[in-house]
Image (cartoon, rainbow, N blue to C red):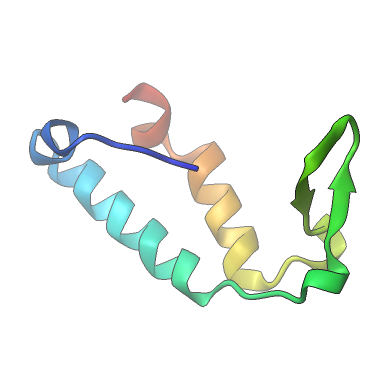
Length: 73
């Protein structure tokens, strides 16, 4: 889960643009429950194995981990 307060967004046009792109990608991601696997050590959390990630999910992951604007805020 990603939570950004409104004052953070209003201070940076780059951050607002990045968040808009993230939202657009997140809306395109879908998967089947039966494809998801339990996270080791977490009985309450499931994840989709990397080989099964659809392209929008891969791009979303890249944006969240590689985006300079996300790292420095």
